[in-house]
Image 1: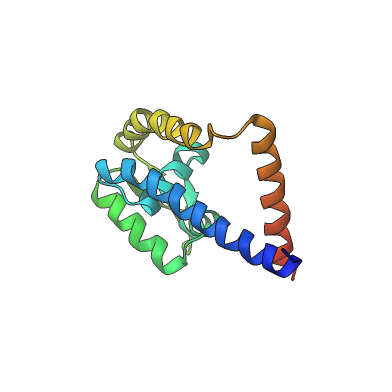
Image 2: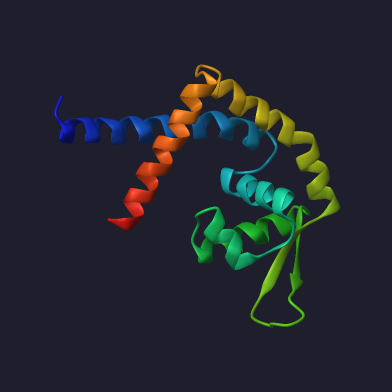
Length: 144
């Protein structure tokens, strides 16, 4: 297989693997009434603490117009609240609520187990190689 065909094959395999991993993860979130984007926001706030809404969108790779909608939904569910920045009226923070933290305390360990189960087919060395390879490809994609 030549370089071009190898690259196209790698691209296809990467996308399919990513979709399969997302599908497996999504099943658990849906049971809890969260879509994958809501879970990603909750996980980010759970681990990083309150964040400007604009920052969340950039970190979890969704459009700024979509992040407002997702935060609205999480506010409606009682898992997140908004807090105005005291020094800059243009900035609003998303803050995980006590109910949101309680939910994540309950569901995050199962999420970790699911991800570990998905990757259990690989050795630690293979996982390290995968991470390093994907970082290289991702960095290269940004600079070309």
